[in-house]
Amino acid sequence: MSYLSWWKQHEKKHRELLTKLRAKKMSKEHIIEYFKFENMVQNEQDFCPLYAQNKKCHDVAYLNCYFCACPNFRFNDNGIEKEATKTQYSFCAIDSKDGSLAEYAGALHQDCSSCLVPHTKKYVTQHFNYSWKEVMQHSLLSDKDL
Image 1: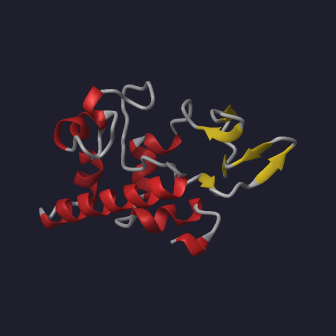
Image 2 (image 1 turned 90 degrees about the horizontal axis):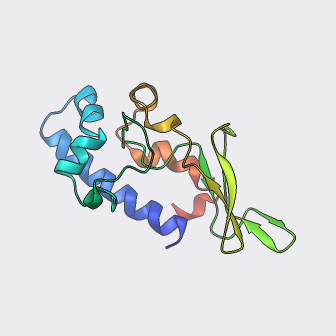
């Protein structure tokens, strides 16, 4: 699956879930709390394929899933930069010290598995927006895909 395909599918799931939560008159604070991993595993099994295995994408005690994709992640399915025989497809806009560039099947991708920046309650609260698409729009390096 391409980054863009995943992005569009996730945006739709996120929008539908927020519509459901807002219909229940949940406050911003309650929505943020709702996105806590343990609650999502119990109540939103289809939101993430890891939920069926009760598995976290990051090994941390508190994990908030509101920003499943990080607002600092940048990608282009056509490639960003070519390096010899490899093409880079993604990177971290803040160059997080906990992120790295990794090679998968001869292509270079941002590896965010050690970075927890977008998964803390503090970060989600500071950057919260009812529109995931609006917050994440900078991830797409080509706006024509929106």
